Image 1 (cartoon, rainbow over the protein chains, first blue to last red):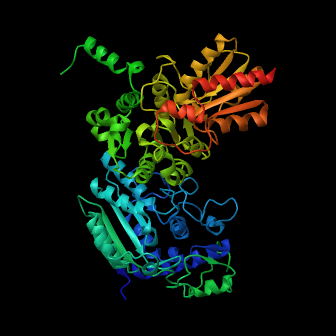
Image 2: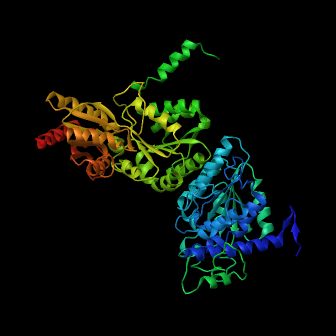
Image 3: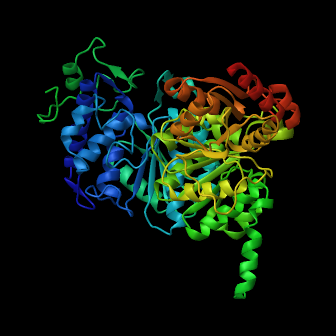
Amino acid sequence: MSATAPGGFARDEYDELAKKFRFVITDMICGAGSGHIGGALSLVEILITLYYRIMNVRPEEPRWADRDRLVLSKGHAGPVLYVTLAEKGYFPKEWLPTLNLDGTRLPSHVDQVRTPGIDMTAGSLGQGLSCACGLALSGKLDGKGHRVFCIVGDGESDEGQVWEAAMFASHYKLDNLVAICDYNKLQIDGTTHQVMGLEPLADKWKAFGWEVFETDGHDWDALFTTINGAVAVTGKPSMIIAHTIKGKGNRLVEGKVGSHNIKIPDGKTWEEYLEGCGCRYDLPYCRGV
Amino acid sequence: MRLPLRFTLLQRSITMDYKSMEMRMVYAHTLNELIEANPNVLCLEADLSKASGTNPVVCDKHPKNFINAGVAEANMISIAAGLANEGKIPFCATFSCFASRRVYDQATISVAYANNNVKIVGTAPGITQGPNGGTHMDFLDLAIMRAMPNMHVYSPCDPFELHAMMKYMAAAVQPTYMQLVRSKVTALFDETYVFDPQKSVRLRQGGDVTIVATGYMTQFAVKAADELLKEGIGADILHFPSVKPFDVDGLVASAKKTGAVVSVENQEIIGGLGGAVCETLSEHHPVKVRRLGIPDKFGEVATENYLFDKHGFGVKHIVEAVRSLVRAKK
């Protein structure tokens, strides 16, 4: 496999980074005793692509006015964003093993008041895309050039407010807004198909006036090309339906109903979950090593 | 075209004749003033801009600062949170029932928990919903919003206070909920009024009883006090423009002087102003309290006078409550 692709992208290094992220996420959640592992693991490639290859940000200046914004509307996926932000230098990696512990600055659901680099508090599902509309509209009103990215869960899309925001964004022609649906097709009570069918999902977003893309959410090249394509759209907002696998990269949870939230011990140990990643990293801030 | 100075002053004095305006017109014209002073001030509506008075007053004059979210109040509040996160100062108006109970979660998480500088304005609170009736009568907005950390909760009693309050809201960076009665109310203050959320305002002096009121009900409390004076009962009228923060010292000082307190609100008596009064006094200086307002009931289609009588919180009920409290003291 070729080591590099356009833009100095080192695929092998990114593969390694993704594996490391998954190991750290697993360690953080095990250290906390429980956590939303499935929906965090499904976003690893998407967040790496955004923060390492697409977004214009300054980790040393988290509130830099011209930065691109990210709203993690499925706020329970906090751990994957924390790993990304820590690796990018927003805050010390030593914070990572404090996930959900008493006095932590890394709560299970993302909180802009507590964590540097979090652009919007989320957690009560359905509100993030609306907030992202506010961020994007503000950019438009001020004639700014930054972009707003918003990651929406598929289960979250059951919330009516998501579709209120969908109407608003196209009515106000928010072409500086790119939403990504983490379409891993599992929610807490079962598959999205069983719990609340979303199909035809692409047609729904098209009908709401959005430019719609579909991609493999774990394929570096496809993600990079698709997100850049979405960013280039003018006159309307874009939705990228990213087909992902819930719990991706940890064989104990991958693709499984029930991977939304794990609790240690649930018949398995911390060590077993780490082994589920299929690789080991001897990182000083990983507590389960 | 540049207008002669005298003409612009005249125009300004007409626009500023808040005393004779409906409260919603004061709201709309004050928003225009605020936008002119700071273009970051935004007017958000959810298809009720005519009811709020901002259509056409704000949308004609400042179309770029006027954002209609359609009939989607929850979306409007979260959008406002996003806008506030970028330094905008959004004022979001809708009927108070939608501005409180319908958007409770968005106001909690997107606004208060995230500490975003959003101003939520609940119009036509309590019994002032008129012919829309029970479904639209909201007796709980003060209680709902008061229980929310980070949220300031205000209720202006007259056009001058509303004007001063909005200027304060635009300048202070904090989540705020404000009640707004749409109709005309009696002016109790004038142009010199300065709003301070930490302070209650004494409108009458008296040693026999303390009457605590907020918002729309303050005008009626003053009428009641004037009637009581005719029969020799002196009432301290304390108007609370802010239910949160709450002027604990002002209330306690008055209660120490009079030994009896009547609270009056256009709200359910649980959890709102009456709740704040009882919580405060029971901790700091227990005295006999009578709470007047809606006693744990839903609304219905009816005139305001009918509802005052039915729930017992109009002027004559305030007078009766004070009489019986003062009698019990002796």
